[in-house]
Amino acid sequence: QSALTQPPSASGSPGQSVTISCTGSSTDVGGFKFVSWYQQHPGKAPKLLIYEVTKRPSGVPDRFSGSKSANTASLTVSGLQAEDEADYYCGSYGGNDNFIFGTGTRVSVL
Amino acid sequence: DVQLVESGGALVQPGGSLRLSCSASGFSVSTSYMSWVRQAPGKGLEWVSFIYGGGTRYYADFVKGRFTISRDRSENTLFLQMSNLRAEDTAVYYCAGLYNTNWAHPWWGQGTLVTVSS
Image (cartoon, each protein chain N blue to C red):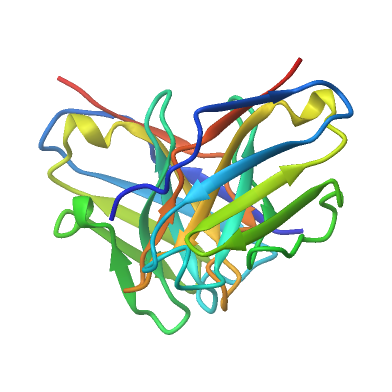
């Protein structure tokens, strides 16, 4: 299966919001509630931000929120902070016991 | 606290083999869903393999028949045996622990670099 489609880049000023899309198909994003989002700083391991489309693990600020409509999931980062500058990846259960990551989006804080 | 520590990454020639290890603490490799994920230099994340708590294993098409995921209960360690390596397998390989019911990856190791080159 092909990677989920994300925009290569997104940006915003401190305090603003940025929304990242993640487009798949009815056999992955649209077919299951198992969409997750990850933040990765350079040289570091990914960090889980969102799971099951909208849920946040303990310790993740509520500035990070997720949603889904049909075959597209979205991550919104509100109140942008300098430390939010990173790469963001969506991921989805793909059916048939596989997992698909998105192409990744680099978020810049202007 | 959960900690996952990978090891075994190295420079290997095309066609060669390598075994990666992922030692876990604060977390049971043998009863949890576990995953290997890789990231080629400058590229995105790519799922490689799952092993479920019951032991069933799944692989991405691009490693089927070449890679084998396994675990050792006594050592609480996850493995990835890689054979017939290709240049395109060059990547940082991460092990990750999953929530058992929703395929989210909350726990990650620091990664180990595999370089396939002559």
